[in-house]
Amino acid sequence: MIATTSSMITSKSALEDLVGELLREDAVALDTEFHGEKRYWPDLFLVQISGSRGPVAVDPLEIDDLSALGALAASSSTVKVIHSARNDIEVLMHHLGVGFASVFDTQLAAAFLGFERQPSLSRLVKDECGVYHKKGQTLSDWSLRPLGEDQIEYALDDVRYLLEIYRNQNEKLTETGRLDWYNEEARYLTDPATYNGSVGRLFKKIRSRSKIRTNRLSVLWALLKWREKAAMEINKPRNFVARDHIVGAITAMAPESRKSLSTLRGITDGFISRWGDQVLEVVKGAVRHPVSDYPEIPRHHTRPGVSARRDILRIFLKQESCRLGISPELLLSRDLIDALANDPLSTEEELYSIEELSGWRKEALGNELVSLLSGKLALKLSASGESGLDFIRVEE
Image 1 (cartoon, helix red, strand yellow):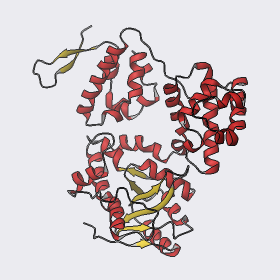
Image 2 (cartoon, helix red, strand yellow):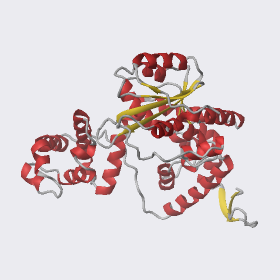
Image 3 (cartoon, one colour):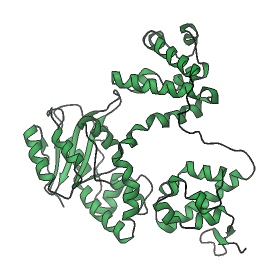
């Protein structure tokens, strides 16, 4: 076990020396402490790293030039082991100005090894290392200096056991033949496009909650892109510019004047003074020249059979998840289950032309999903009572 240390790197030269050592290692553990409540781009307050010599903390408030960390992030020969990697990568990509290569996400790997889709780090530390992870500094203000010794130790615990977990998981993935599956799924972590999709997710959420009509979708898309750009320019959260329900209300009304804009509930004089003219211009352009490049809207059907098919697919997913030892949310997403229930595909060619069902999922599910959707599998009560329900093959 790695000895406890409270080392803090506070100079550029010390950071360069550290990274020089780490670049000679096959894997290093990485974590960050940041606050994102008051900025569009979260403020980075601490970077924790652990290699063969144990964990250390890097203080970005003391070091103006973090380019050495950028070299580590971009290295393809040194694996960066991160738990729930997406947020840490997004924050570091912004502050370091580089992309990431060779990332291993212990949370994602766990989902291929029988854990739920998003197990906590403390759960993995306990299960893989036999150690109870401390939680005492969860709400620490990491912007304060000097940091207390207990704060630093708590932060270092987030990387202290990651390399041991990584070795164990890598071995188990190899033994079970799942390493290639994991590597295929994990590609999105180093794809820059992964970190540009928040507007699309918000579009779907606001469209649904605000019940936006089809002829207003172009307006919603234009307003969301405008809000994203405005928030970036002033480095404030999206809600500082306009909350989601305000964006939805403006979309539904599509106002043509400041007067009509001011009648919307929740619109302040300050908003109209600062953003009013821009909003009206965005709305006018989207109404006069509608676009269709917004995210695809899934169709929802109420015809008979959709609900029953969805229930059967969920039972199938649960059983396949247990059989494979893979998190059900990772195996098939809720959106895909709904899509297959709404528009069932009965041939292998149709089914596996769906991007989410290609690759490792096709290998994992084989022809069973095709058989189910084409009516060749039936559901029956289990006589043994062990599983409750069983799928049986239907004779032609």
